[in-house]
Structures are given as structure tokens and as C-alpha cells.
Image 1 (cartoon, one colour):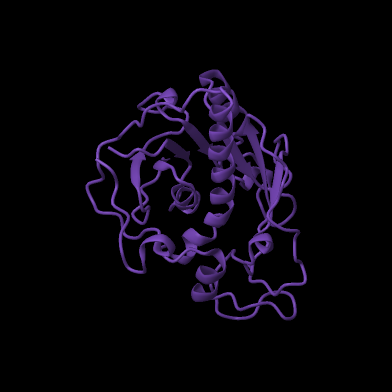
Image 2 (cartoon, helix red, strand yellow):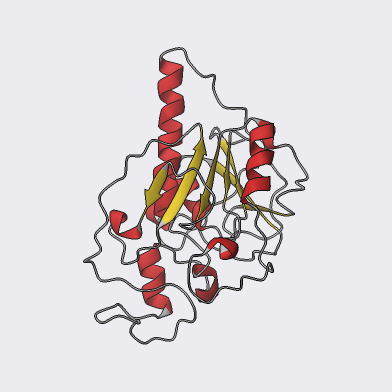
Length: 253
């Protein structure tokens, strides 16, 4: 069994958040209602609001509800076809009493503890995201936004041409992969992801907070690891930065 504290990634998609939590030091399980063949860790296909296990079996929960209903501007539909799930997810997590983070786009109904941008991590994307934590997250960021940096726009189709603004990086799969820090996803999956750098940064903050609390006799250690049955398929990718290119992250038994 893994000695790492366990994390649950709700609405995990193809695993951008999960990879960052793994790099921070968590043993991660992802949940999504759609199959995710490229997801690199343990995966459970389920409705995030009707889970087949207890939230309290995990030390930490991350939730990234669909953002389409909250996007400001653009060509998003406003006729109610996109669900608004932040409030029910928050209510569920608060009732469970587990430490959590909810992530979404600017304009979402979150208490904004922290705002991150890809350029803070030296990435050629902006992709601003808001974060609400319980306990609240510290507002410190790794750097200020560098909006003079050349970026690519990771949305729509990877058409290979330059972006809408002058001097943008190309919108092709290789550029998207490089600037997101993600090398295991298809282009359509990249458009729905956030860079692992975001969740790694926050995951380390959470773990450091627990360690500091224990060192002064505060909060107790997180729960013992909870393990879901191993995936039938081996994961297709892993933490290449930590383990070497081309090697897989093996889920714990």
C-alpha cells in the first residue's frame, strides 16, 4: 500500500489535475462520468454527486465542475443546457467535512482564495483559474502574471495556424502539449484540462500545511490511504518529469 496521503479528483477528465497532485505527493484516484482512456492513475467511472464510496475515506478532495455555465463572454450557450454544479458539489464536500479545493473559471460563484495563470509557471498559456479551499488557501502565488509572454490558445481545434492575436504561438497539438506541460492527452482533452503545475503548487501548499500543523501539535494526520480496485488497463502515461520519459506510473495495490 502507498504511504502517500490519498486524494480524490472529481471531474478528473484525462488527468491534468491528478498529475499535479501526484507530483505534489498524493496517491490519486480520479472520478468522471465519462470513460477516460488516457487517465494515468486509478479511475472510477461514476457521477461525482453519487459516489460509490465515502468522501471521508480520502485525505483531500479536488473538484473541477464543468465550467461552461460560468464562462464570461464567448460563444457559450446560455439556455441552461450546461449544468451549474459548483453549489451542490460545495454542499456535498462541506457536509462530509473533508479538506477540499474547488477550481473553476473567472466568473464562477467561488470564494476566490487564489488565482493562478500559466505564465506564473513559465508556461506559454494564460488560462486563469480561480480556487476556493476549505480550509482557505493562502493567496501567495509563485510569480506575477507575465502577459508580455508569447502564448498559445488551448481551445477549439488544433488547426496549426497562429492564434487570433499577432505574435501568438501556433495552435497545434505539439505546442499545446508543451505549453500545458501535458504529453499524454489528445488535443480535445487538452482543451478541457488545466496544467498540472497548478494542482502541484496547491497540493504542496496543502501538504505543507498539514506538516506544519502536526509539528506544533495541531491537526491530526490525514486518514489512512483508501484504495480502489486496480484499473483493468495499465495507465498510458505518467509523471515523466519525475520518473523519466516513457515510463508509466503504476497504481498502488
